Image (tube, rainbow, N blue to C red; front, side):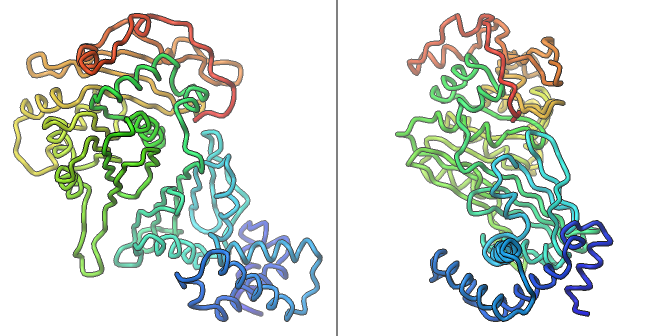
Length: 454
């Protein structure tokens, strides 16, 4: 009995529907796959070949390998076999069809046999599985190699990205017990725009106009929220409001932002090499941006001492800077920002840090993932200044939780003005941007559609 057959029979016992359904076809698939890898070898990684040329060579070899097999195949089985092997060699194996599915926003591989996907903000277990751990590991190695990173026993954690910008995190043995683990947060081929967020109910029409005015008026904004709340998507949409004649520099761990302007320079961190040298951190890149004559600095996420450098930039003439930060509410955002500044390694008095924050940050946009799976902006809050040793905040827009939920359990509320006119309206007026009083008075907003939440 072949190794692959034993693997598939054990897969059937463990609940693999594909293996249990037709082990003979699975066995053939692996023989053909192995044959092609041995035959094509280095051709698969030849940068001189275009994607079409590589696909043509793979399909020619694939048809030849199938012709040499004596296993009788129906037309449907043969087509499925060609698709599966092509996905393994040219794409990302079993998860290739999930990556092509526009309804899937996240893919979570909890080992080879358990793959969860997120659709409409809800997690479901998918029927797709890998053959074994080596099969999943081979796909992880392929993804990581594409962006010049590595993952092995000495470096078992890795952040990477797919060519379309989708965020990838991989964890392998010995850290991943029962793994490897692979998490992919997909990016839409067509990036979301402000109209999409309004349609999803993430924010209201009036709050969208307000945010656009704030970005054009070069206010310093922090987008805050928990994991998976849509911070990067919101940051990308807000960045689209930056005027096209400004020089924008983005700094990220793995490139995710998809800005539509022409004058954009994207910087990406680099992990240490095998010898533990050559690391370039977010903080190193933020410092370097100050020497690149930026009009706007956009940092994908502040999670360490780079928060201090970001505040310094905001306080030294680089108005209109944007970043994201993990926090549960606007007050927690300020507390976390203080903590991150202290991680820079300087023994600064708390009051000095708070004065820096109050002077640098103009506004906090808070996101939350609600119980119905939708992602909503719940606060748009002005950082109003200092009173004694405390930074004062005032909410300009708040999500109306009091509206309750509908029969389907979806929140009916929307983002509404509180009636407070922010102090920075004078700063916006100096830039020629005038906000009428109607923007800050209660308005009747259309209810968000009953489609999928974001």
